[in-house]
Image 1 (cartoon, rainbow over the protein chains, first blue to last red):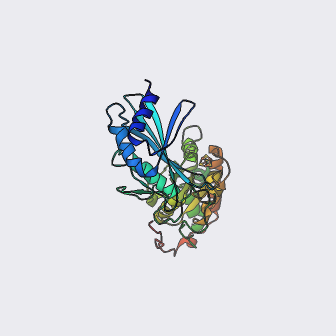
Image 2 (cartoon, protein in one colour; image 1 turned 60 degrees about the vertical axis):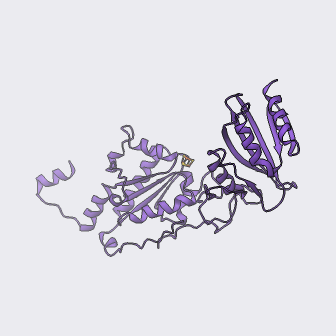
Image 3 (cartoon, each protein chain N blue to C red; image 1 turned 45 degrees about the horizontal axis):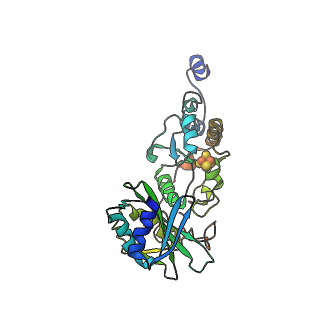
Length: 164
Length: 172
Ligand code: SF4
């Protein structure tokens, strides 16, 4: 059994109700799951002795603007044991856009989730320190959302006054 | 040559205080290298032996604003960094001048985007803008010479009663 079949089979055994879609495009395995099980799936993938996805390489999001499930949260994880990259996805259905944080499973997700929160306004529940990453504290918008203008909103970022 | 010849002739020269102060000031402009991104590399080149900014008396790049007359803002100034640039500018003693080096600093450059200040003249009084992305070191030297011209036209009493500015930077 190769790695892909192993991962798919393991997930199907344990989370058969929660898998929305499995796609294998150009050798990239992406598994879309329901947002409410992200924590359990992540914990399972990391701790299962045959999988051991111990490394979280990236957490980010996609804004589909007009689609019904507007945001997709994307996780890239890696297993040294299998030498395999896996992409986990989860569609957020409606406002408020919230998903469980995986920081307690992968420490590296801490800043990735902060960045995703900063840029897309997706709230990660039970995150230890969900502050903005790049934009100043007190900024009210989320710049990578599709409805945010490229040049920003005038006056939303303060500038010092020009001397005389 | 020059002054020494005068000295051996008469032993004195006549000039005005303004002229001699301005001459001294313009011959020893100490820059504050506010190198924020890639333009800083060209600013560093301007100090190397080939371009040698020391020919203009400006080789003393001080990394403390309190010893500087000229701020070379070299790089992309984001809104977050603007607060810092302004705070450093406020710490420089008067009289002081500013060079906006490069497209980013002068106008936002290629970063026409929400996070980059579209020209630092929105929050700093700029004396010379330098075109280029990045400007060549010659261009920076040209800007420095323009500043020197400007300084040589100042009068010492223009700066007599300048009070220290109030720090009005928000910490955000
Ligand atoms: S003007 Fe060009 S070289 Fe200078 S900081 Fe901007 S992008 Fe970099």
